[in-house]
Image (cartoon, rainbow, N blue to C red; front, top):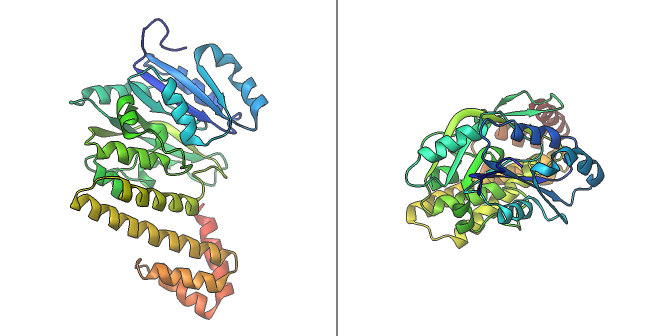
Length: 322
């Protein structure tokens, strides 16, 4: 494995895998092509149903990785299993359908070591794309911007947003924060980053594009409604479990109110596309009490006057956004 010949690698690369046989070679190749080589790779097969194909795909790399195979328990449990086996001071996370450019680890390590006192979390920009070509390639920061200092409150407001496959954290910081919440299968990274940041962490962001994030239809992150439900669950959990200052609590409550309104709006869209017009109207009215939007007001009026036509228009608009 990379890093052999040294007593302890500086970085442990954690790769959870589920239904990844088609992508895992590209992912692993991107790791072993890094210009920075003081790392170990820990690959976790999270009970993937494509087991035989996956095993064949990773066969050329088996002598260079730490390989863990477990029953399916979700991405949080898979990453935690990798963290518990990790020897590195830093943990670099990479999803099994994503990849890094050759300078990724070098840039993240340089940024981390430049911070004083010890760095707890660093992350970079990335390119986002889909194999289907329905989604144009764009920078992650165009979709999820990062601006200003990386703090608990800026992460909470999502002024700063860290993609999992572009993030490296200090192992001690992740452990002290309690690792990934294994009850979460979505927004688990947002939850952990916030818990790390709440402990007065030293964090930083580089706008340099260091990797590529693939959007796979049907993946855990490719469902806006369920992502919003998970975000609300994370915020409710943190509001109850963290000791917050008055300012932090105010920021969290404002974010929670916004996330709940966005969730109601997304449910309204789902009801509308399913032809459940009364439920759609009720949901959009509820969202309208919190969200000011010309499009939302138009949808409400359309549902009152011409629900089937509104259904067709909204369906065509959403299809065009994919």
